[in-house]
Length: 118
Figure (cartoon, rainbow, N blue to C red):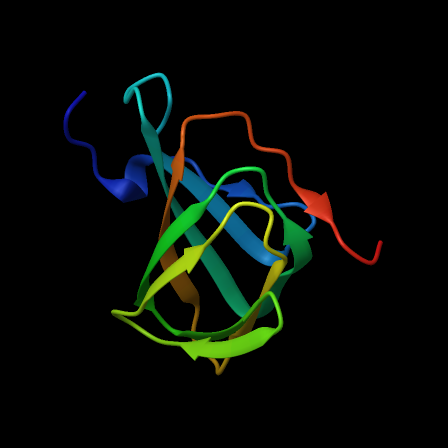
């Protein structure tokens, strides 16, 4: 299936995120190397500090958020690109009153999310 509309893909809640959902737009059963996911965080939403065992490449489509990456806190907006290396602690917090929406590309490899400070 080479083309599908993103709104036709089911949303699933992201745990332990708050007011956050994810859609797997292209998954490992369709593409051999990478998965393409769209995250939507509603105002007041976010994801607590955690690490992953795969890198993340992200592209902001809509809204604003603060993202903590290691010891740095950055504010991102539409058209910003974000790179999160393997094992680096990171978190997300929506800023403002509109949803924060971004694409996230990850390798098709086992990914373990580990919460920090839990």
